[in-house]
Amino acid sequence: MEVTTVSTVISVVLGVICAPCGLFLGLVPMKAGLVTAKQSKASQMVSFIVAIVFIGLLVAGHDLETWAMVIGLVIGFAVAKIPALHAWALHKWPFFEPKKAAPAPKRVKKAKKK
Image 1 (tube, rainbow, N blue to C red):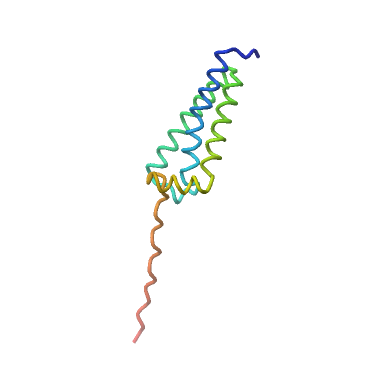
Image 2 (cartoon, helix red, strand yellow):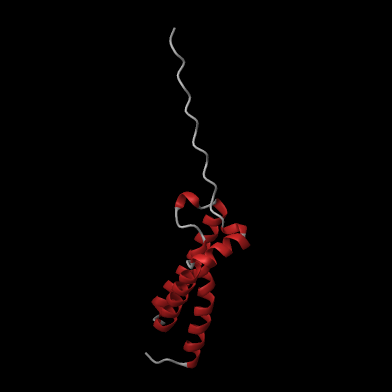
């Protein structure tokens, strides 16, 4: 495979685009019980678009571009998992806050038989 200037430019662009996608996916809660409906829809949409582009490039034989996408996603995800940055992002953007856990139902005591 010959690496051309166009291939290099596309790789850089895809890597730069995939880094925020990985950042977004890293900021969304990992546990399914903590994900809100909006977060779920948004992360599914981002994942679907990235997967379609990745599979298209893979089938077309553009190895450099697919590796650039993977590296961009991994770097973005890793940056999002830095504890200080993760806490700052949760404070800055309320969209990424986990769903509030429903309070546990109170136990009802059975009435005593007379």
